[in-house]
Image (tube, rainbow, N blue to C red; front, side, top):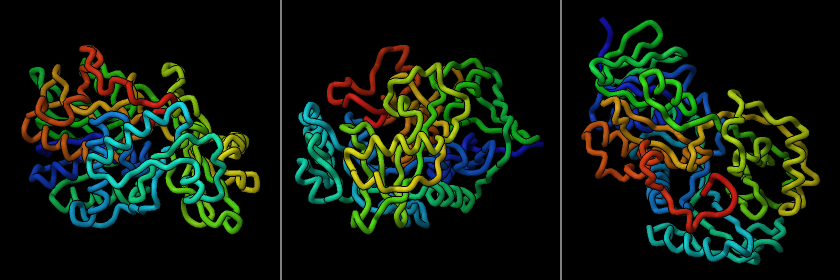
Length: 398
């Protein structure tokens, strides 16, 4: 006879680990199933930005709560998420200054330490930058980046400490539906009975949901990145976590002379790609692609010309038609829940969204939840997460 659980979470990345932890913390017996090892999917390749600047109130809410969780990780989760408050900046050109100022005003109204800088202010903080094309920047001095491995491992440690279990290296998961309701999963030769199952498997969520007759509008989203070894003695430091919409780039400093930058698949990060053309498996950028990406950044950081290329990597995230996550119950199959649609930005939102989803699983109250705008049926009903009025012209980060 198989094991029983209050909740089975399929997927042990930052999304699955987050909902699993908060469900276990609330007293539920949780089993987490993953096709590989914890955080081995899109989470393992994330730049792990922790920031609050978004262009709609729903994501701002979860970003702020996510920042609070990371800031108090030891008390809430236990251990350390590797959160380093090196600062965060969103840079726009002159034509988007009004939008940025409005967005900063709203984010600040939620208690975030953030304010607007002009080009001179950016230059003062990071003197190695060229700022002639900068209209303004949103600056968050208390934001930065975390460590995805530390975050996932401490979340899952919390699950196990509360009586939960991990089933790893289980590539072929089968959903069990009885009389139209979720009844559990089959994984790695065992049957796990549960009235609740969360699918947190990124782009793989579509196939799993389809196996029980549910269509989920999520497709693969390849994201590439690499390391440039910068002349740090010349620069005097490395950039804070940055989304540079004016330069259509993202980058941040890491350890020593390492700077992470986006490389390869820029059309997906820029949200200009044909979703149907995404590869099933992301291929790491070549050294030539990394160098080309660095050359595009030279207009902002001239010292890139004297950088040396380092390693590259790529992961497959999950893309939705509107660039926002899908988080909530599946009406067609009671007991089945979705937590997918990373769109290149879920890492900082996931702990707060996971806590809210755990509340929904436990209480059954979704319409009242702050997750309701992220419902799977919004595409069919025409409800929008964002009106687009204050969104920027490039990037899935908005």
